Figure 1 (spheres, rainbow, N blue to C red):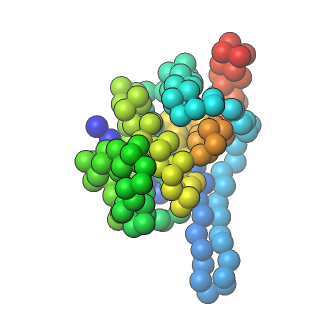
Figure 2 (cartoon, rainbow, N blue to C red):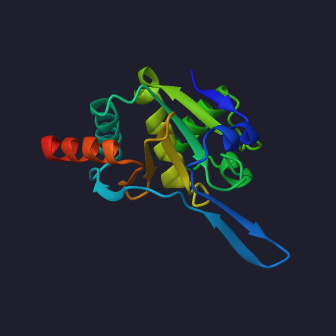
Length: 178
């Protein structure tokens, strides 16, 4: 079951997530982007099922036991507009999944899932990514933040390795899995 983490707690415990805020007084975006070892972009497939299967395969190969998902802005996970949409059956299913765990219109924090929940969680997460233009900058990482991922609506997986050992581990995986 997904575990909710309040935004303030997530900001304290997971300091490597990229952040973006708009400052009204200066009319500027202020951002934070962590230092990282290397950056990669992977094409994960031509359809939703292939993308989800590829991402889960990468996570299992890297032996990531749990993930933390966190948005780079203080916007809620589910926008008011998206929460009312009923035009795409798979989106309605995803919204019902998140509603079941009270990850709804007002929730702005992080979500932690264990590896046994990947198959259930990722199709819904990816559906939000594809169907809600405002659902952006939602990174996910292992709890120790050795590696950060961003799944783009196109299926491209952006990867930041945060240290040398995880960069080597990731490169080994790419070589083995081709």
